[in-house]
Amino acid sequence: MEPNLKDRALDVRCDTLRAIGHLGVGHVGGCLSVVELLTVLYFEAMHIDPAQPKMPGRDRFICSKGHAGPAVYAALANRGYFPKEMLLTLNQGGTDLPSHCDMNRTPGIDMTTGSLGQGFSCAVGAALGSKLEADGAAVYALIGDGESQEGQIWEAAMFAAAKKLDNLIAFTDYNKLQIDGSVAEVNDIAPLAAKWQAFGWNVIEAEDGNDLEQVRLAVQTAQKQRGSGRPTMVILNTKKGCGVKWIEDMGTGNHNCPLSEAQAEEAIRALREAAAQDKAAACGKEA
Image (tube, rainbow, N blue to C red):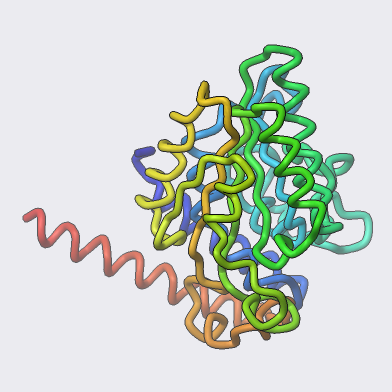
């Protein structure tokens, strides 16, 4: 593991909160649920170079659930794609960090997303293009569980399997909530693993998609499927708003909600204090 991977995840979570808090409103819930995945991808799994955002043969990450853009920006800033100070321009006039990912404005963003379902089709196209170029790149894509109700997701899934795109690794942020209620109540996608298997994909499931070790293991297992002739779906059972109890407790209400600077800073203090206590406890056990 990257020595400070837990610290990296903490920074990404805190910087996500700070950026949304500075703006005053945002997609807090679905950003915080994917922090561990973003940390593993950007700091360990992907072949990328912040100094060369358009490097040929680089791995791609496409956030099809584009409203998680603030968390992606926090990961990019911590990885060195742009200064952290830019995070405080989130979704403001003239910003290069709009609320949803925009490849024309933000260094390190490989596809403009936000219209649910479309980003995943773009990821499939990128994986096919990489195969044709034989550049060895992997394409990683993140979709939401509510987004998985889109028919376009399943058209793309069928195409990816038909074209044997084993360089495509996708993730479902299965936090069970969407803007209008629970996924099960709105339009249930269960049994999710069986659906992806039926569409010809390898399927891996992380029981706790907010546990760094489980996410790391799932990503490593997915990477080993290269050469299988099948794309791979990793289902991450996550918690919307993960890391901040009062945001978690909002349930569906945290999809896009107000967040003041004071609330953000209080949440950040609590997160950092909890992390310090965990480190102290770990040191005590080692002693």
